[in-house]
Image 1: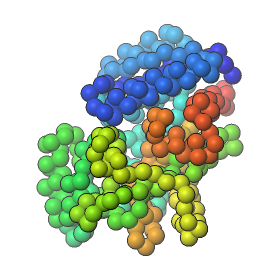
Image 2: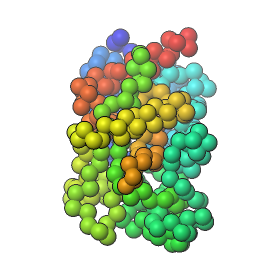
Image 3: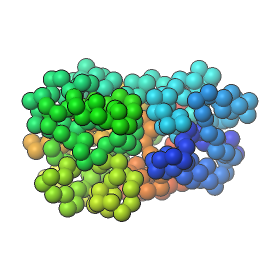
Length: 326
C-alpha cells in the first residue's frame, strides 16, 4: 500500500551523540518512506506534547514512532504510545502497555522475576549485593548506555557509593545489578503476519580487553569514534555448532519476553551469558535503534531484509494491527 501520510515522530535534540543519531535516523526513515511512495514529514515533539494535537489535525494514516526521549527525558517516552492510543492515532512499534512496563529497568526486571524469567539480581540502593564480587551501576531509565563507563563496574560493597556518585554526576536515578561475567548477545524480533520472527542472533565481541577492563558496551563504545570500545566491539552472526543449544535457549527466552510484555512491531532483547552457559536477560528494548548501521538493521540484513524492506514491513505490521482492531 502506497500514498499514505506517515510522519516520523521523534523527541531528540542535538545535544548528545545518541540524540544526534536519533535525529539522523529519523531523517533517513522519512526519506525511505518517501521512496516507498508515501508522504512523510519529520515532527519533533517537546515536553508540552503540542505536536500531537497538530498531528491530529493533519489526519495521518500512521505515525512512525521514534521517540526514545523527549528533550532529553527518557521518562516521558512511554507517554507517547499512551497518548496516541487515547486519540486513536495508529503508530509503529510497541503499544502503551509494553512501553510502560519496560520504561524503567527495575520495573522490567520485576516483571521478568514474577514470570520466572532469568535476570541478574539488582538493588536500587546497593543493599543486598554487598557480597557480590562485581556489580554494574546503570541508569534506571536512560537508553543508549548513557551514564555507563568502565568505572561503572565495582565491587558489591561499593554499589551504594557508586549509585550516589553517578546520580550526582549524571542526574536521574541509578541502580546496581549483578555483573554477569561472560558473553553478550542481542536478539532482535520483527513481527510478521504469522507472528514474531526472531532475526539472526548477534554476539558482541570484546577485542583486546585486558584483565582490568570490564567487557561492557558502555557509552564510549556506542557513540565515541576513535575510542578503544568503539573500535573493538564488533558484532558477529556466525557461531560454532556447539552454540546451537545456547542460541535456541536465547530464542526461546526472547519469545517468552515478547509474550510477557505484549511486544509488537519490532523489539530487541539483550542478554549476558555466564561461564556456565546460563543466559540472563539484561533489558527488553521496545524501541531499538533503526539507524542503518544499528544492530537491529544488521540482523535484518543478515536475514536478507534490506533497509527499505525493513521499514516497509514495520509499516505493514502496524497497519495490519489497525485493520484487526477495526
